[in-house]
Length: 154
Image 1: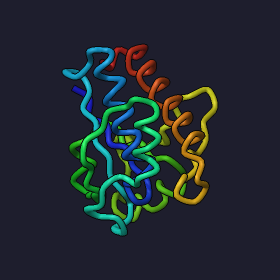
Image 2: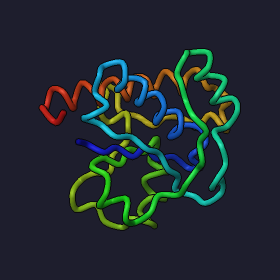
Image 3: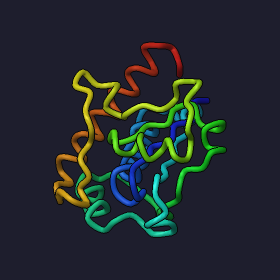
């Protein structure tokens, strides 16, 4: 089983959306026994908070199921527990290095590194563009699943 951790700044928008989008994709493909997914933040700002309401509304609009979410900060021990730690933007990677200073196993990447157009996923907390964020996360998750299948990881 491969374990994936999605990471953003507060764990109430992008990483939480990624967790539930990926869980839906996994369920639709019957891969629940092969992939485990979670999400976390680099900051402590939103610890314990649920997903941001506009993020929930976007998932509702797209018929992506989700459960009550409790934002949490990534820990040093998560590095040993997870096989991939996928950040939403370079800023997240920089902040992650304060918690997990080294990446000897090359686990830390951007989610969109798996796409044909690697880039940051902008923070909808600031942009307000949950449609663009959703589309970028879908692209990243689909490309990640393709990669995992192509490389016989799952």
